[in-house]
Image (cartoon, rainbow, N blue to C red; front, side, top):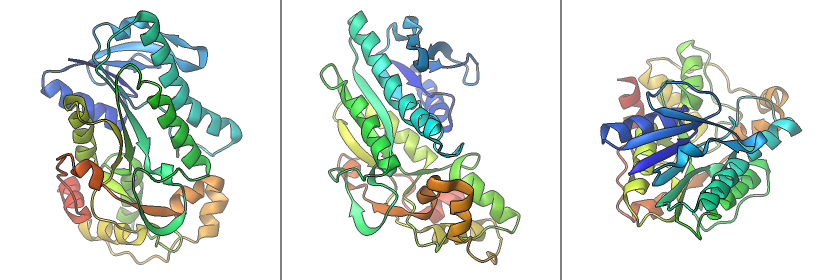
Length: 299
């Protein structure tokens, strides 16, 4: 078994790499810039120029596709939105074209997606994998992302994980909220009632590992933990575990819209998402409750 990871230098890619290495599974990365962050062999590619080092595919049995420009790193200009989509879709197409050209056998193509598939909306519905994508930017982005992964179906097993907010101490939403809370200026965003589907980083890693080693894991799965929480609930729980009182008033929606523009919808809106499908295939979440997850992260 040999795993090629795209986006391997990110939070999830790095953590998955370490788990695979600990289990004596060979790992290589496809990167835009050579680095030795994870002490594995790196190969260069540039999707914007349709360039890839074909040596990255030698002996590879599984591809884990995590590549993609950061959703919340920059303002959503028209150019930025194009990069967000193309860095996910064109990268998958480039891999498929090379695999077909080289006539390689592949055991599985495992792709990230996001609960953004269900859109930035307000709803009391609990969404499952068969629900349609929402007609907004993130919904359409995730739909194209998954469609690009599905192009691998004629040649191999395809698994897609719609990830919720990954809880990690040093990156992402939790890092940003906790930093504000530690400085005693943290507070819920908007009305605070928006749902935040979440998953502990360790469970996210274990899901991808589960898909690598289990041939039954095929199709689309929500990658979220059991407990459904709102932004307000999460903020107060972070305050509790960090021993900080939340006393600031909620951040008004208009302020976030002024700062982030269209991207503010992903902060101010959110839906409930079910994880029953992946659990039915005997995947065991280590962290089903956010209190347990936060205690583990900040212990």
